[in-house]
Length: 333
Image 1 (cartoon, rainbow, N blue to C red):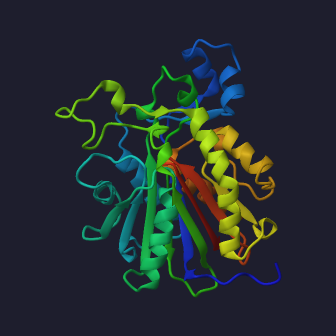
Image 2 (image 1 turned 30 degrees about the vertical axis):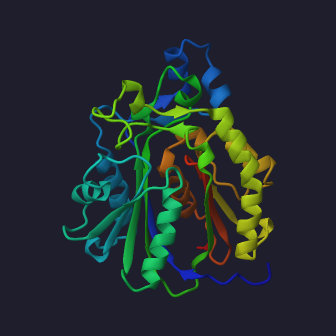
Image 3 (image 1 turned 180 degrees about the vertical axis):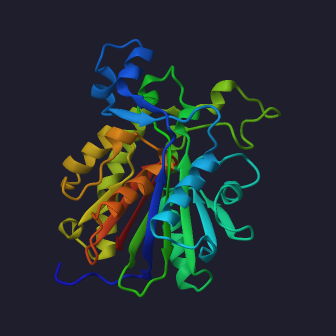
């Protein structure tokens, strides 16, 4: 790459932050819970540990902790943030929207504009694109994007495949328009609804409720791992090529690749099939597990805070999500 590609939406990441519940769960603890021999969970899932919230942990307070962490790290005045975007897969409750709950728990002043964006596990990517459009349209000056999911609340412990992979957490990025030297190059979003039943929690909306009929299991996460992986694997390589072409980039141009931390298999697919080198890949799955929508911004926080986002060198956010949805975004830090 001779020259950095042009950005389509100027945007600057001012700060990132994260938050974890205090309860660390080692894979050995899950070995005991599932009645398996020592080392089984780590070998099968690729996870050494993850964090699970206690029953009294508030999702909105965890989200606010990540937001407050981002404010603190860059000494940002909370009153300077004029929009809060809450980008997560699971709502705090059906009504009102979750961003209102997060706003109340955070240091941002009452009256700050706020709303939710939900594209399952890739919600943060879509929120970043929305933020770029709003900043460049002049509607807002500084935007906080927060993701938080308590995946452990929906674990079906009778389904070993999905029970092993999930962790809880929250992360935040605070962005503004900047001077145009950084920003979004291109984005791509596609949904293939023939896979809609492969990954779902059926309750929480109008489809399953006390009047329409509901079972306790409708509140738990259901996944057909083989079918979802097969569908995603068949689509992701061509999707990846088209996103790079839209961005006028090649794989070698990417200094940093930040994927959704979906599973050990999905990250190995990035390495082996998409040929993403370890030097570029941000992989926090072993210590965090799949944090649903919080996975991508948590990995972004690790990249940002450790200096692995290089000014002038393109970076990529990419992931698959329930729906089945594929999303990717290239940007200059």
